[in-house]
Length: 200
Ligand code: SF4
Image 1: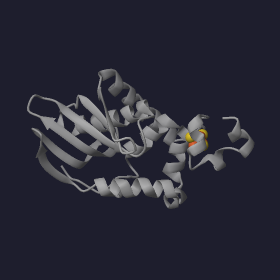
Image 2 (image 1 turned 90 degrees about the vertical axis):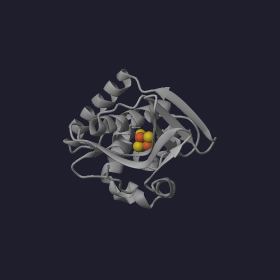
Image 3 (image 1 turned 135 degrees about the vertical axis):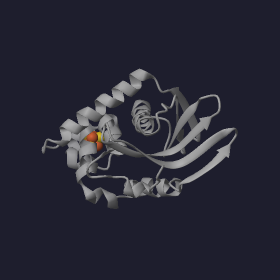
């Protein structure tokens, strides 16, 4: 399979997994990332990009009995979806693990699970093999969390892609999602007045 850098996987025809997963967290944030190039200059976005650039060196090797592929570009022609998997670990007993590395600590658990499910759909459509384990590794607390990639999770991810595809055809900004995470969001002052923010 072809591998590309993180910065080049955002495709104008295909939806990126990053945007679809962000939609699950907050539709407005996903819309801003999809349309607003100005965010690329902000500190936290740059920090995330730097971390990914560090991880995104395409390699293959074996590690503890697993065949490991890093920074693997995957796409689904059926779904019109493209992304880069941080790591795929394939074992001889049939286990296929999809690993994602995140800044900070273990939170937004379901959003992370959906992101791995979206990447797994791309991997499945490209290889015919459906990954069965997801692993989220967070650098802040150096913890990993494992979960089964259930068929219900894959179905939810597919539905999410369809929702975002439909939304993309609309020109209006996607809705905000008030939540405590707004306080740390780079878009908070575009979304809310200081008074509104203090009540979230
Ligand atoms: S501030 Fe809140 S509503 Fe606005 S983009 Fe960020 S998370 Fe979404």
